[in-house]
Image (cartoon, rainbow, N blue to C red):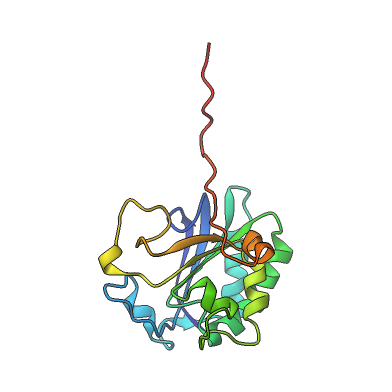
Length: 184
């Protein structure tokens, strides 16, 4: 697997400060994709042990809330197979931090409710290691700059743990960042 970029101190792809890994390779080819260069599976640099360790180190500070996986397409089968051991290791190192994943595939496709080529032998385990899945292709006609953590209105922000327990998608609930108490 190759990666297109790593962004440390990212505040756009999930709550709080995060490290975001942009993998290479995507077959969706969404119109006006913000990262079209990463469609090519050969784009970028190899995802080596040294790169993994650099990402792990970037997540060590207490102020880092978690890891975000983007692309390209993290849920392309070839990428899933490489990401699974990486996310397993991340969970072992940082059990208190969360993992977000952005995918053009839908929850229904990833879980097998709708047949899709994205499902492979590691999909269920990788999904179970995620906290949040932002699903669905970017749709230019539904683009909305006011949406938090997503680009178009068709995309959902799914609480993976609750969804797996419920057997259906459960939307993630944003938590307030600031206290609303007043002074007397």
